[in-house]
Amino acid sequence: MKYAAKCSFGRIILKINDQRLAEGLQLFANPRNTAAGGLCMKDPKEVARRGLEAFIYTLGYAVNTAGEDMLGRFETHAESLDMLGALGFKVPGPERKVCGNIREVVDFCLYWQGQREEYPYEIDGMVVKVNNRQLQERTGYTSHHPRWAIAFKFQAKQATTKLINVEYQVGKIGSITPVAKLEPVALAGVTISSVSLHNEDFITGKDLRIGDTVLVERAGDVIPYIVKSLPELRQGKEEPIVFPRFCPVNNTATPVELVREAGESAWRCPDCVCGAQDLERMIFHVSKDAMDIEGLGESIIRRFYEMGWLRNIADVYRLDYDRIAQLEGFGEKSAKNLRESVDKARQNPLHRLLHSLSIHHVGKKVSKLIAAEIHHLLDLRQWTVDDYLHIKDIGPVVAENLSAFFHNPRNIEMLETMEKLGLNLNQTDEDRPKAADTNAPLHGKTILFTGALLTMSRKEAQEKAESRRRQKPERREF
Ligand SMILES: [Zn+2]
Image 1 (tube, rainbow, N blue to C red):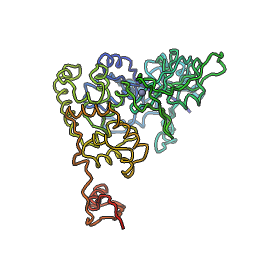
Image 2: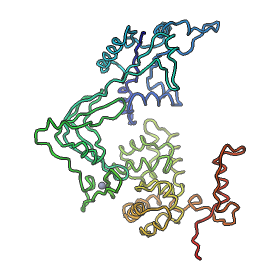
Image 3: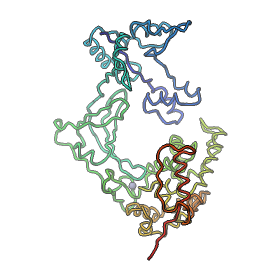
Image 4: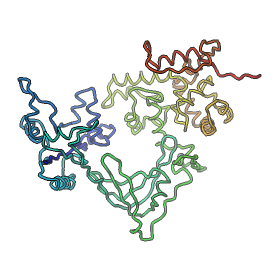
């Protein structure tokens, strides 16, 4: 049996990222996503800018001018690739070899594992194939892949380095993420100087200490992480990592104590004033799930934030579109479109706005329940925890979070500013519960649809039935 081996490819993206950095755009994380994303873009000019190259690694269909099958004339896979190469297609070159036995296959794979840093593309393994086409036919296919080809994945790349210090970052809802600062170490083509430690349990579970020598790994596209510490190399000066009790970012007169709710892995700052949290909140605020502001994605929010144009979500509603039109990559038209999407968002129903505020555990459903109960968002200033608990499906944790948010003067001030900037804070038709009708024909009935329906989809049928059943929950006394 003969074998052929070839590499799988990813285009190096260092050059593209240099360019994107210069233009203030978000950097690509890895070649695979850059290539895959590039192929989905509608603008061919944009696709061309990504500098993609295609290597052909198999021939699936071939006929001659008379329409006769040519594929069957190749005895081996290697011959078909040679022909493609002769026709001018890019095919694997030195990284392809027809091997005489399995030992040669293993040696060739291991050779390339050792050469991967020298190779001009990022690769994470090789593919071993049966070369003889008749044997390929005989081995056949599973429902997913051919039985005559198998991947040889290279070892995840590892390195050891020193854990120098731990810093803490604050996320959208105030979650505190510990980040290990490392002595810079080269690994899989990048220099690594900091890695996330996720949460306190990760640190205690691996018994990590400041000053420890740690083993760092990076496999494929995975972001680097600490596999373990090497306690045998300790010298006695290593210090335990003490997770902070108070917010490491807020430098308010009274320190803000961190909270950790039952069943959660993260410590949170319940009242964080740091910019990073505001940035995360803005990114969520404009997202599809929240205010759905088209044309204002994460990368633009980050860009405007770095330029000092955005500090909190209220700033989204006072952007200077003349200045935006001057920016590289924008122009009059894009600036005008952006203004229109922001204007549209000003009229959003209340439940969207409430959801967009990133109050912990306040998702779409809770937002709708509350929006149905109030005339104006700032009515919630008067609400107590108990008031929230009167709404069915709202639990004590959510009630506490909502109450804390609407009793915080900073949040109230921000919402008042947003209202002055033309944002709707009033209950809209979409927020109001649908009118009660206890005489509705299907009132109080449970309906189950099974099988295929002829004249409408199941979802449509469900909506129709709902509209004939709707009732406002009411309390009856006997
Ligand atoms: Zn804080």
